[in-house]
Length: 259
Image (cartoon, rainbow, N blue to C red):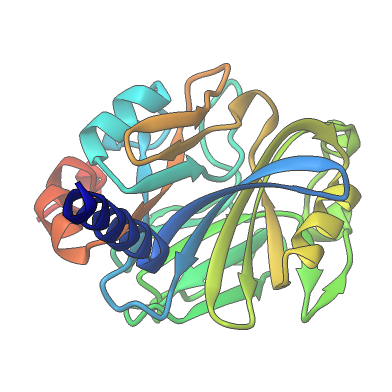
């Protein structure tokens, strides 16, 4: 019995260590009395792949979150950038596999290079930027944290919808000093300024807002952690193993860039 007990402890320790060592983790915590779920992604791991997908592999289409993750089979996923409720076109630029799949012209861009270097790039409204240095780009916003300082100015980035300022469910993405991407979501209605404080308290030196409200979606390892109330047009996908993404990508890539 003692041997069996020791074996159980060893197996439990190994399993916990494996979970802790994972490059993609889900964390539930409270910041400033705001309950949040965090998908933490270690961008120092060269096996990690962060990319995006369009609904039904085309612009201007919608699809349930469940359908999108069933096809992509990522480790984790969150709602991407805002989109028009009539046109279903994203408001921000989207680059997948180094190729522009949509020009939106609004917001600040989360950019990931092929070797997992992350940058947040400010672009003037309706300006066409050269994204050729990046593997993945999604332009959303507004900015919440810039170079370690909180600052929110939606109008300066081209956002005109005053509804964006009202308390709502929120999603955001930020980068820490140790090169971890944090995708943070809450179902507590809060303002953009409150979300900025959350991201800053979590250690983000740069952070932007993502689409949320009725579009709030978060998926992690087979479970939907936050279910959107509407169909979506785009997602951010996170893969723990780049090789697995390579096996799945032709069911994910937009039709216009598939080879």
